[in-house]
Length: 172
Image (cartoon, rainbow, N blue to C red; front, side):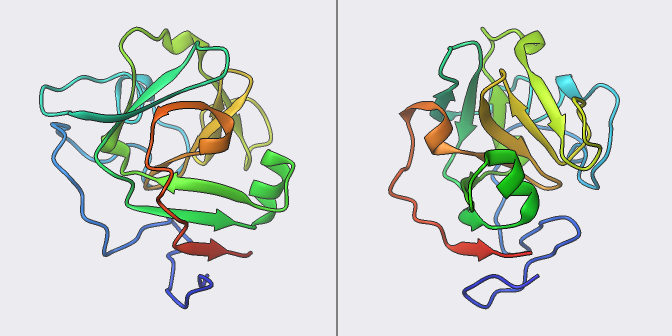
């Protein structure tokens, strides 16, 4: 896959080799980096985990307020994606998303993980199998192989770098 600005993107796992990862206190491998299902995912990034090194810079919550995610640092990138999965998932010609490292995102402590609803675009049903849509029945974000994405237009963002323009455009 090639992005509109000519950069090569790793279509197999979405990794950007130039993206610098910040220290958030997570010890261990990046969860579900190769996609698919993973047991115990709810206690790993980007869900319910805690660390004193994680410094919240941004917060975003769904419209009903059941889910709130915290973000450590700035997004590593922003993108417009025109792939057919994103078109179907969002009911739009493309999706705009800010990309964060998985270890730079977590569900806020006051949120009940049982409010999370998943939809696997590859499996075609409600299940946590990466890549998948994450919501409270309202599209809020997605989890990909290497990073979770945040969709600014689908949430009430209290603090967010909306000035981060998309740097990539994907077509598949």
